[in-house]
Length: 174
Image 1 (tube, one colour):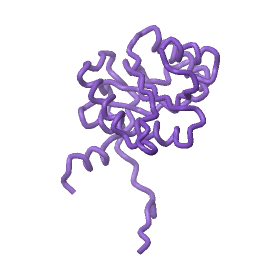
Image 2: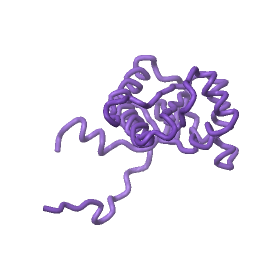
Image 3: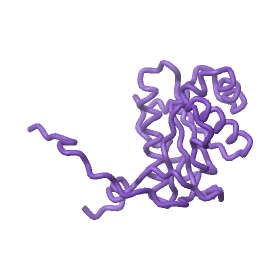
Image 4: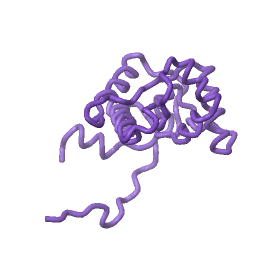
């Protein structure tokens, strides 16, 4: 099918190598805005989206994530921007709502020529005194959990070609 949206969905890949230059404000705003248009349970718009470009805070997040992961490397793959998505802890659809926002932003990034990768371990990172302190510094309300993050930036090394889709990935029942 020759459709720009379908093509973007079929060709997006996780990027794990970024150029050091920061994305433009317009590009960032575009990606973040698409996250705000993701479907949410009953239209509540529960997720809180925070883009981190501050080098000091980015380093702090990198160290926290690496510690949870048990590595010394950068779990954000050197991306100059980290996008964190929080939602109300314990809310019935917090993970689903935040995940849809992350998905929208990954697809939007690809559509405008940026790379992204979903990064895990934020649940553990922000469920610590340091994590809660960072949330306070970010001006976030109490009672949130961080569902996930995106590394975001200009692609330095193209990701590998997609793996073939598994047999019987989907079924149609009529």
